[in-house]
Length: 150
Image (cartoon, rainbow, N blue to C red; front, side, top):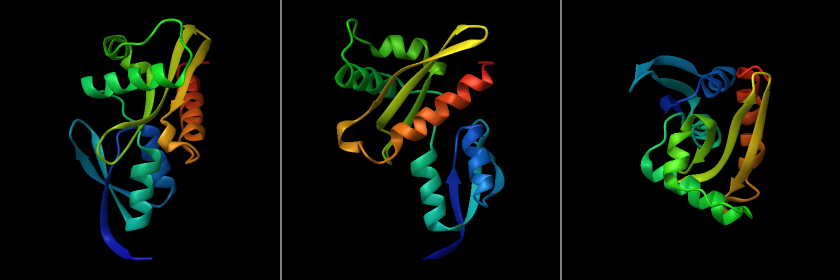
């Protein structure tokens, strides 16, 4: 295991921040609109946090379109999603991104009552199946629903 005393991770979600802290990382500071920077005791741990736990709270137009395409390809929908629809409800989506920022998996968490949320259209790209993205996103969706009072 290669050691890198100051491997930096940039993480965007407070659940991810807590997970990183639980794995032994320390907060170094904040950049890019409260984007935390962490230092981890090993490069492998830092990389694992970045790749396995990254959640994006604000989506680019390209990512919104990628989510729409993924949802349309992987689900049998009577009404197709568009990038504009996804962007309009961007706060409802939890996603996993690849190293180049491409969408690998997504799920929508939608509040339907003050006490109730729905988890909609969990989708993982075909090439990314069996890597734990679906399970991780379902956990994120459950945490998001709890935050919303469900």
